[in-house]
Image (cartoon, rainbow, N blue to C red; front, top):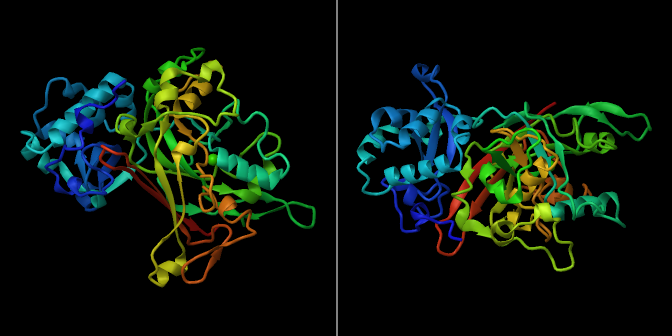
Length: 438
Ligand code: CA
């Protein structure tokens, strides 16, 4: 099956020069979407949100583009939906519309396009855009698909039996909190109830604040209540991906999580990157999905031919940390971890299919977190809990500081990119959050 078309051609270049710089996140082969308003200046203060396309270091304003540029007939309904300023209205139009938009934008932004002179006036520097969440998020579910994370955390809790017997059979997840999802920026240290040495729990600021390196999946097609989405149909329900940081207060979490799972240790904040990289843009980076030979095969409802041949995604992930003192001393952020989404135990399609397998209805704009994506080796933990071995081996930072968990003023940045032979590198951008005092 060939998932690639002219929009993935590595020879394709854009008339937006910054899109052709090798190593950039947003070449013309990517075309991620985000919701934004032009920033700065009193004139723009009341500007409504609109959807834009990331190209090089610019944002193409599709609301202006609809007004100022001629398009092929089939593009108008798509651009009308996007000009309403809500990505959900467009996602709801379905996979055929997603493909049409990508082809139309690729042609319009390609070198030599007749539309270039019109669209040139619709570009603004990315730094002059204020971003918003891509749409209203109705529901947010966080899974636990990173087996190396599950194993490392399990090892700290149950050294003899790190992986619970259900792990290799059922994609574990919990219902998260949609209202506290944001784009990063300041993140306040949460207060909560936690164990204390006296035996009586205490209430106060979390002392074991952590990040979790995850990917977020945007649901682009709804299913009716009672209707299960088969593994064969699941890909048509997935619109795209972002980076996701599932901030976690380990001390609050450790005290509250039995027997019903995560609650206030997680729900104070979740941060996502503003750009939605579409599943189509990720097509060159799909890989076969296979389990180790000794592991159980997924049950039939979680197993399909396409999922086996193309279900996994080769996405390189990174975590960067910069403390307040590093900022003051002019020290650059340090990369403290890296991993790859290929190590996930469940594919995006399996997560979506499993979520609907009881008839639960997903809605356009729902967000699914993959779970922490750690790698198998040292230095590939997707959380400080893993990297510092539960706080017993603090990370040493440039300037001599040490970190077991996050301190006030720490900035955590997640980044991701994809590379493959015969494809142009694309990136997911980044999401950054800085811890504020409780
Ligand atoms: Ca998580």
